[in-house]
Amino acid sequence: MDETTLQEALTNPKNLGEMTDADAVGTVGSPDCGDMVRMWIKYREQDGRKVIDKASFQSFGCQTAIAVASMATELIRGKTREEAMQMSGEDLSQALGPLPPMKIHCGQMVEGALKAALEAESTASSRAAAMAAPSQTGTLVDSLSASGKHAGKIKIILQS
Ligand code: FES
Image 1: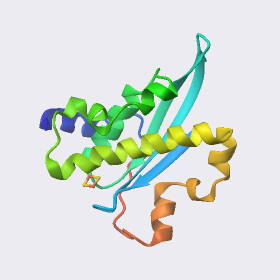
Image 2 (image 1 turned 30 degrees about the vertical axis):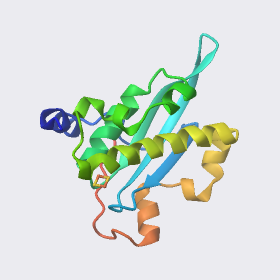
Image 3 (image 1 turned 60 degrees about the vertical axis):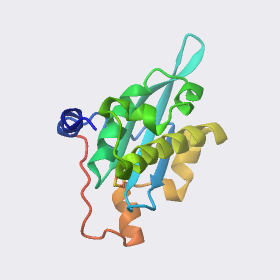
Image 4 (image 1 turned 90 degrees about the horizontal axis):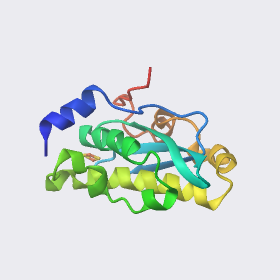
């Protein structure tokens, strides 16, 4: 894994924070380590196609997941939903180089959050669904506080 790229992504993470006008949101937690990532997506029309206008994320804990999520939100901009669906955790973390075995699930968790958000958009007229689903509202802090897990140990960096 490329430590310099990792540090750069952590020093200046892209698209970090909740997106209030998102069309879709997806959240995935890792059973391996208890970390969570939530991803928001907004679409726009371009040349008659619907493409991803922007994406943002919230995460806590694992640095690799934060770095991969940051890169993923940049990589998927301008892609259609179908194109973004094709991207694997490996594709999303490519800039970091091969992940060590114990970190592979970090990239997979980001992939899971991305796919959950892409799926959310396809199943219902998205924004209403994303806003209406109780489990999808609020922030990760709310979710984690509600579950009681990680209470007092949560560190989430919000976009300024
Ligand atoms: Fe679990 Fe990275 S250690 S997501």
